[in-house]
Length: 519
Image (tube, rainbow, N blue to C red):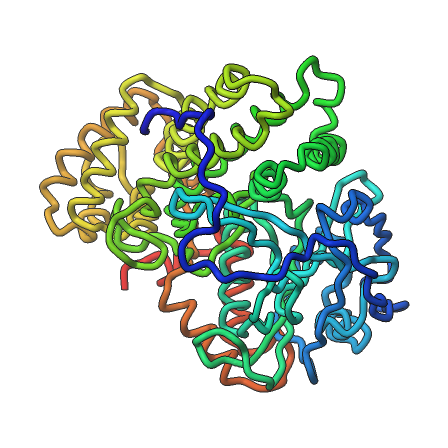
């Protein structure tokens, strides 16, 4: 990775070239009348405390969504609903649909839009903010776990400029598929709880109907929330935000000698572990910047996200040529963003040396976690110093031949430690099988060194290598089928989308399918 950025350097304050000018929403204003709260339905049991709203105007503005006309429920994440403790079947009821469409608020909630900034393409892009997303409410459940609900696509916020604040059904479903895939793999992510749609036109270029997406997360705090306050000179509000984050999600830091440095260190470590999980799973975010990285170490899915199919270290989520958003460049991009977060924390941390010391563990943590996850995928129970060379050789071979990434790891479980009788499935994926033959002998020797039973190792590998892979063709088929469909029960019956969502929620179950094989 490149050397750490200089925390003393402050990027220019002007918005990036071509950025749209927007009215300043920071001036005090009378809050709009809140939408009517749903008194019954699956949301009625939630008990919001609106902690973010109590932080004050610099961190959020009360807003009223623009309801989606004639909404219908399209998709529900059953596991996300279960995590919130609500009945997924109830989300199709009229009172729940009113919340999903932005026509009613959550009981006790107050809808907010939050301002944040960000570095994009390593340049300060100025203030951005929730353009079409509304924080409906936040709270703490009976077990003491923080939760927050955010509604995307219910019209413009004061930060939207001249945008209409609408979301297309295709974009909403694509995000839901990625969040379900990530959650099924055990990768920390913001969840897509439900999607509602209307026959009204969406604002995106895919010509699909308008939709809303209800997200669930412990919180929606971005690096850019801190950066916005730092560049505005609102160090008082910066402290309020940092104290809220520590109090809500990192209470163990409250009594630490240097709580703000501790927060910076923890954010760096969480980000390092998150990116290691992306790399091990072949996930390419496609838009890593300080406006899309979560302080809580959660994946905030981008429209350009994708999973590797034919392995290419230079692959980007948008399918373009190699660059700063390429798969192989993700660790360096994330580390650079952590240092930008550290710059925003300087007024609280106190010195550049303290901030750099807090972020120094990033690379070690990333490397250790990535090797741990890859050993699981290769069925290696113990760590060895020469494992790095084995892994480097594997990924060089995958890249040179553009070998099917999910299919290869599924097939690798068939390799035996004592002979080549189980090599055929992997060899069939290689354009140059001789390169595989050379590598697999090193791998076989490593397996013999551990002396584990092949059947036990293979069974454990199948719990680390998903049978269900989210391939672009499957996404397109599921989204197209749902966009073309009208009415019906979401995620049920013969629907392509429903079947795919269920498969992604349990990616390690059942026999290997065509999803894990090359097209």
